[in-house]
Length: 99
Ligand SMILES: [Zn+2]
Image: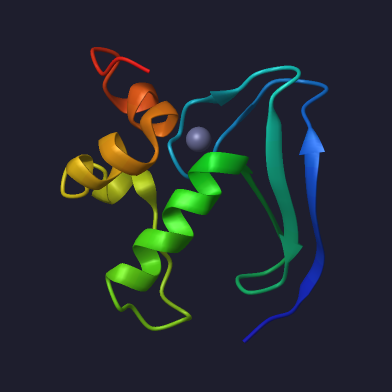
């Protein structure tokens, strides 16, 4: 079990990949940055809405708190939820979904 060393919402100053959807976080987009030691020293970065969607889905899936939920892994199973509740996130996976 590790510790969270820092946790903040930032505005991207350079593009970096989102740990949830695996698409780019573009310059100027808001994202959550968390530095933790759960698996060695790691930095987690995700679009703010990807992070929110993954937390909600994590709860719905009734996973153990330590179990990671990754949108990129489960998006297909949770498509209906994402399209309804997080259309901007859904549009990253399925561009045909209108926002
Ligand atoms: Zn994302």
